Amino acid sequence: MPSEPLIALALSLLISLAPFLPAAEKSAPEEEPARVVEEQPALSAEQLAALAQTPASWFDEPALLDALSKLPHYDETRAQRYLAYRTGGVWTLEQVLRIVNTDNDLPRFTAAVDADPDDGDLILVNKYSRLASDYVPEDLVTVEPAYSNGGKLKSEVNDAFCDLVEAMWAETGLHLVNASPYRSYQTQKNLYARYRTQYSEATTDRFSARAGYSEHQTGLALDVIAPGGTLNGFKNTQQFVWMRDNAHRFGFILRYGDGMEYITGYKFEPWHYRYVGVDAATFIYENDLTFEEYYAYYVKK
Image (cartoon, rainbow, N blue to C red; front, side, top):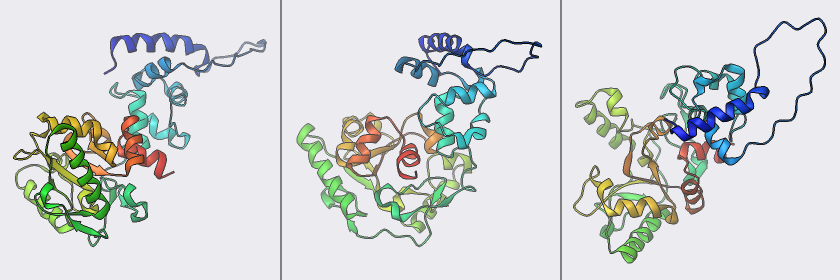
């Protein structure tokens, strides 16, 4: 929810914008003098930040689209889809843009399309983008045994991971273990089925990917732990703190961030990292983006 200072600033901003926002139609007098509408001044960074955190329910339909159009990544071709989030008082303007621009307003799985292998390290695999059952990445290699419990990764990812582990050791004296790298379609299918014997489909979908919808099948993703540790305990380790702040230096991103389930489709996974290359990882880290957003704004377009 927006903080009180942001709400106050947003209210002030709405009042200042009122003359420029679309108004309801009125019966015009028989003779109405021509009106001169001054050009609206550009919003400051502070005003844009406040506007982004304003609840969508504060606007009528024309005003909502007008307000959204002032924010980065507004897409007029998705206008009608943005309007679906006007009521309910749940989503901010920024969240509306993030949801619709990443297609999270569409039904998961049933609206899925085939992932594009030509995207290389930037391939998107999620609940809207699936891999074929026979997809196997090229150049899989066995992960360096000193840094892994076994398994494979793409060659360049393995090299980057080894560099990362060695840097962590050199800078902090901490070790890191790759607990779960590449998984085949069948392995993921079996894993998901096992979880389904314990949890409902809705609950399972929050933490386990269905077969064909797992990044692990790309050979670009891995789960890490501290030596002798567990996945669930990783967030309480110094290794996690270092990974959160430094993984991008080696081309990795924290894939399923805290509070981003409405975009990524998965609850917070501090142990799950995805290789996208140093340039993309650094940009994502510095701009606080999900990979879904990066893909929508800079890969897909």
